[in-house]
Structures are given as C-alpha cells and as structure tokens.
Image (cartoon, helix red, strand yellow):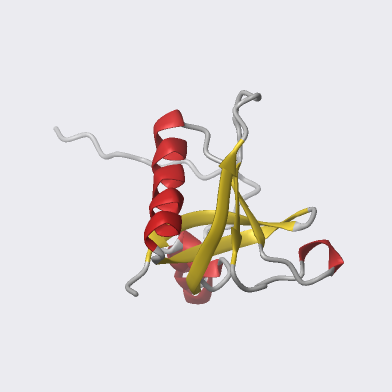
Length: 128
C-alpha cells in the first residue's frame, strides 16, 4: 500500500497561485541583483589612491581626473571602496595603483554617497 503525501495549508494563506508578474519580478531580482544598481562609470583616469590602515576595515580612497558625481552637494572626483576581506581590499588597491602607475582607465559601479565621496561596488581596468 502506497502512502500519499499530503500538504497542509495554513488557514490564513491563500491557495491561489502566484501571479505571473510577481514571479517574473522575483526571478529578475534573484537572477540579476546588480541590475538595479547605478550604471557603471567607464574610462576614468585615476590621479591618486590611498588606504588608511589604522582601522579594522580601512577604506580605499581615490580620485579621478574628472568630476563624475555631486556627493556632498558639489561636483566631486573623490571615490571610496570598502572591503570586508583583506585579500579583496589588497586586490582592489593593486588594481587602482596599477591604473595610476600605467595611466590605464578604470570602470566602476557606484552605489551612493558617503559625505563628499561616491561609494564604489566594483572596479575593473578598462581598455585604453
């Protein structure tokens, strides 16, 4: 004799299927979470880079040759990157330092302001 599995529905939950539009929206948010972030900034020239090592999670601050945002209410070319892992932080610092030394452009994806600095999610070297 086979045992039939049963599902008990809570009394306060509707048995109606999820609307197709909700399912589509949910799948987009799960599959492409960064698609709702700001557009990437491309081909920026790094003019300075610094990292303060006196805190537990030191940020990397850098500047570009042109103003690209208005954080703090005025045009600015200051950017900041946080990394919770030391290896990631060192890799990002090395990328920015390489871009500065070799005159290579960088591309960034930003995520908002922290005072006069624009916060950066990711950094990559761009083609010259």
